[in-house]
Image (cartoon, rainbow, N blue to C red):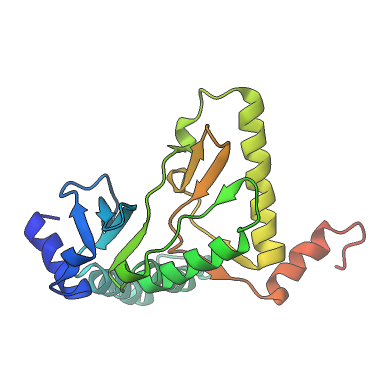
Length: 226
């Protein structure tokens, strides 16, 4: 996204006085994906922040592309009936719509921050409410190494991280019934100095009802109900 386009999105979302909220913002993003890019910035009080800015028109183009693909599938006889491709694409469309709603992601991040407030191993960056709109998301900037770059750690440390990730997965599914469903290792940053993992990117977070999770509990019980 060129500079002029980035500035236009910031002005449309945060107002013409957005620079009163962010005293500095790096023009070159330090991370980018298919939906948006992330810039490092600083608030007046010196807090370093990560500001995610959505590409203009991406939400509309995603919906249009998926709807066009659905239309093609409805006219096609090449796919077997049992594949349920249409249902899969509808689920994909819903998840991509969630990913494009940064207000929803901010709320999900705040929810996870509260749920994990007392957890000794996992942490969630603070959401900067003044920098949150549908297309802009500001959060506390944190350090760490993505888990897919942690091969050099000792086997003991890697085992501990894996154990904690499994514990988190089970808590999300059976205790919180609220899960971050994007298994991208770049969304997990390990800080060796604190021996903690920071969680990022909550756009695909979703709730699960007891009618869904209880089936898994039954399967894992000593006497499952068939």
